[in-house]
Image 1 (cartoon, helix red, strand yellow):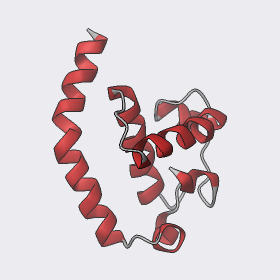
Image 2 (cartoon, one colour):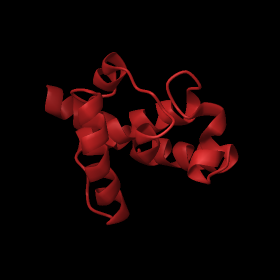
Image 3 (tube, one colour):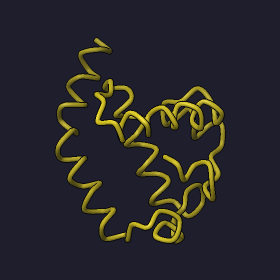
Image 4 (tube, one colour):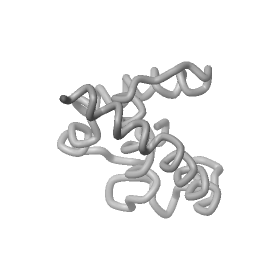
Length: 105
């Protein structure tokens, strides 16, 4: 999430699509979410969804995210990041999907 305040350039529309109110909200709430993750605090289903979406976009996108500069800006190689993302997607994907649908319905 910290990369959004650096080399990545988010548009208002992309911030909203990822579940934030605006780019300013992405940057502000991103700090809160990073702190919560670092402290191993629980996140709501909506927060997990926003963290995952923002991380996936900022990692993979050369247009909006860090893209090819990811390893330089984060210190994580693409290989490390893919392994972490896939593990998180498998671990929380089904749970998150179920929780969000319960909240929506």
